[in-house]
Length: 106
Image (cartoon, rainbow, N blue to C red; front, side, top):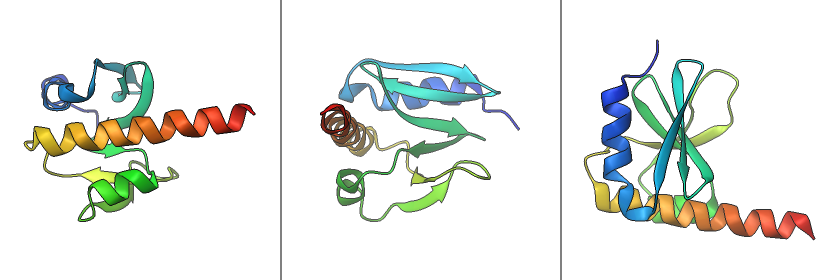
């Protein structure tokens, strides 16, 4: 099943407080980027954000689930109506991912 483009746009709008959010269609689903950093996917009209320790601390009630069979567990963010919490999660996740890239380049 593929995701609905209207739902993806809603997710983009809800997390726009984190930065410039864009989506790229991938195999009927969507990859999400914040200021050019890949941070999550929308699969079957569900939002999954890359797993980082900072993200788990930001949303302690969130569940870790794979977005699709064979995928690594991600933070499943159910309440996309909460744009403030979603934007905060995207910010801390992208910051953690940026620090991780810097560390790996050394």
